[in-house]
Amino acid sequence: MLKFTEEHEWLKLEDGVATVGITNYAVEQLGDLVFVELPEVGATFSKNDDAATVESVKAASEVYCPLDGEITEVNEAITADPSLVNSDPQGAGWFFKLKLKNPADADGLLDEAAYKEFTA
Amino acid sequence: MDDTAALKKTPLHALHLSLGARMVPFAGYEMPVQYSAGVLKEHLQTRAGAGLFDVSHMGQVVVRAKSGRYEDAALALESLVPVDILGLAEGRQRYGFFTDENGGILDDLMITHLDDHLFVVVNAACKEADVAHMQKHIGDRCDISLLDRALVALQGPRAVDVLAELWADVAAMKFMDVRHCRLHDVSCLVSRSGYSGEDGFEISVPTNKAEDVARRLLEHPDAQPIGLGARDSLRLEAGLCLYGNDIDTTTTPVEAALEWAMQKARRTGGARAGDFPGAARILGELDNGATRRRVGLKPEGKAPVRGHSKLYADAEGKTEIGEVTSGGFGPSVEGPVAMGYVPVSHAAVGTQIYAEVRGKYLPATVAALPFITPTYKR
Image (cartoon, rainbow over all chains, first blue to last red; front, side):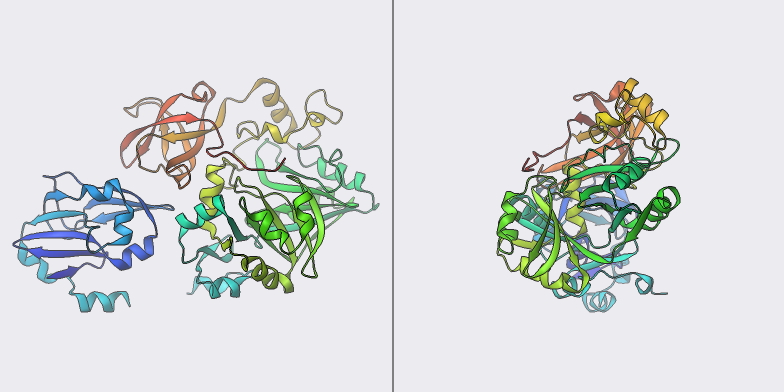
């Protein structure tokens, strides 16, 4: 199931672990990405902490942690080639996997229809 | 309140919208930051083919001596810039800057000897102040008028072929030559210059014909429209100063490594040495050096180092030595590039220093400017 934040992250939830990335909409706003900095595996974050950084040709932006949790895996492929985020933001361009502290918190995030309306 | 309501539009505004530009506020104008290709592709297009930029927001100023003599206009303007203007041949252009009494830079500009007068191009954000500055100091000797004309820049290795479709004689021009010409029956002023590090042209066009001329240039398969985003990364790779970032009233021309723009005639011992605002300081720095200097910086690793990042002598961030004034990703360099000010003790090419990025001190090497090899046709 896909969930979204108002800060333009998407989450795919499976067994209490969320795969997190930034949305098509966010990528369109950012333009060509040239640098991605990912968190370290094992790091714990609270909701809205800065978890990653993306830089386009023009500017740097933070990627927030969408919920409380611990990083269990990061996508090194996007640090090697940030353009993967541009070409497939909601697939191969995922950022990290987050073991959620309270999986039920995900219920409070936007669903696909609500996010679509939010960005319309 | 809608901030865009107060923004001015250039004569090419409708063209930008029709080409799918994303518009942003810039220096009081609504300007294209990028088109659908995106900043990265637009940058590389300009380095490989030809890019068309709208620079109509910049100020185009005619300075004409009340006597009608070029020499009088040249000497009047020389009282405001440390540049040899009297010695500028007709049909030639030169880079320069207005200085203040402390030796700081008020604006940078392009100065052309055109027939019996001077044609000057200044930055958009400074143009009203520049005209007032000239009125105040040389208005008794010269008539100064801000023209209502469009200005486009056609930059890149294919620019000459694109422009030759409208005017075959363009191929005979050399870097910094300026010529009157007719582009499809429109009376234009063309200079072989620009701010991308590439061969190219700036074309001054009557406002009501600007869209027509721009569309004709864009008909060429090698020409694409380019926005402010790529304009910034191109000029940064070319090591060229952006007024307000790399130079301003707190930086002197020698600190900014712009000695090359100050000719012998205006320096100590020259025929018309000094006699411009801040001359004592600027001539002193020309003779003895400044204490700090603008340098190129090549950050190691992949993280871009942006403007205002602090620079340190050591990896622990103990000794702050300066600040980045422009920085980002260089698409042609395929990595981060930056410029900033450091003490002369740390200005030699190859010196390793450190830039603070998000609390980390990233190594960066002082590098020769420009970061690319310019393709000017000298």
